[in-house]
Amino acid sequence: KKSMVEEVMEMVKITDMKNRLIKNLSKGYRQRVGLAQAILGYPEVIILDEPTVGLDPKQIIEIRDLIKSLKKKHTVILSSHILSEVSAVCDNILIISKGRLVASDTAENLSRLMQRANVYDMLIQGEKESLRKIFSEIQVLKNIRVEDAAAGLLAVHYETDEKIDPRAVVFRILAKADYPIMELTTSRVSLEDVFMELTNQDEQADVKEYSEGEEKNAGNL
Image (cartoon, rainbow, N blue to C red; front, top):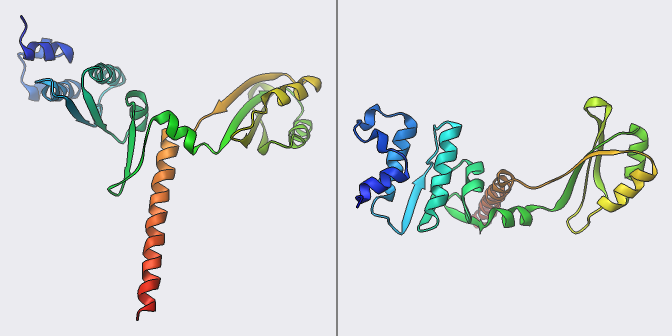
């Protein structure tokens, strides 16, 4: 039967390096050794701090896959400022600003809560001024932009309130005008956007609290 050390070495794929000194290993393998140390003994909770810093894209994918596999039997706490990694690996996200917890939810729920509008981008074959007029007359649309794009197409951006889906209306109007829709995409708020807005809100709250305190102190002079 394999020892626990051998099992963990196989798990993080460092068995072929077992006879080498850690100081002679690459950055990627040293990261794997650190992971092996964290996993050894199979603790209930594993805490990882920036586990993919300095790794190449292939190593990053392998480490992320390893972390995902650990989730099946362990609680894994990942501390990272690489928000794309957090989105790819974590089930629940906690955002901390200046020592205070400002959010705790799934990435999907956080994005949905922060999304105040449905955002649409289209590539359309048509005439610019005519398209501007068409979209300006659709009352549920806002923040409309019509700009030149590649291959003679026009890029159209617009937004609606969260509960309104204008795509069927837009499709029928453009079909009637004989303006082909070449592409339609909807945008989501990224975790980076959520992080920036929540931490900015926290900073603004600090400034307001400080200002109110200054006013109160001035009144006591």
